[in-house]
Image (cartoon, rainbow, N blue to C red; front, side, top):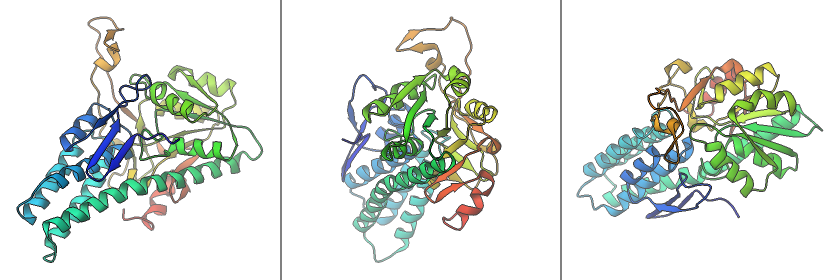
Length: 356
């Protein structure tokens, strides 16, 4: 049985409420873009690919319900709602890229005099649904390329992986990006063990990745974020693989807070460090990681656990949701659906394959 975080059929969208995991598996209905915006903001759904998919499918549900009076109103509505969805979380690039892409499609449809309002709605729905379907295929390609590269480097050796945050079915349309690589290693019967970090303060690793690893019956161990150096010293880690919320032109990568320090540890211990990046997460408009806007989360996430305060009254908090790992620390490479590339060659490799 495959873990389903997003359940969709035309006109209906439900998501697994990730705030309740791992103790409860509850699906909530997303009836319009406002529902999606709040679900994304509150992190009931998270992960860069999943954010874009849920955002766009929510618009699909909403436009299906609406009776627009003319084409201009239809196109304006689609543009306005997509731009609104982008404001839910600024660091992950996927929602912004999807908005730009689908606004352009809507505008082109609006200029086609042969199309009716219903035609435009149909075309947008098909485009949103195709993105949902394509994401799974992309993830499986990333899984295969990443697993093959790791196995090529460690032929005949036990494969012990470390991952950070959550990059599996809960963060995507299905299968996963970084966790997809680990999933593929398991399918090939080459995975000896996988370690996942807790990912404080939101604990996506402890709550979500651990949940997926148990669900998939992988040999797995949860470790505290502060144990990574000791883990690499004592447990013969083969490689680190993490996801990405944005990869920019020079290969610098924004990912969940704590990724940067893991990359530093990996460099010291000569452990290959990989980033799994579908091309929808690549941002060719930014030259370096210094240009990435880092979202800061509410202090409450650090101060409380399940509404019980764990920190002293009066203490100030610094709670960035992401950090930027410099390209030179990504020693294993960046895994895409087209292959594994070194960070300094990523832009050149991708520009011939996708519009960048």
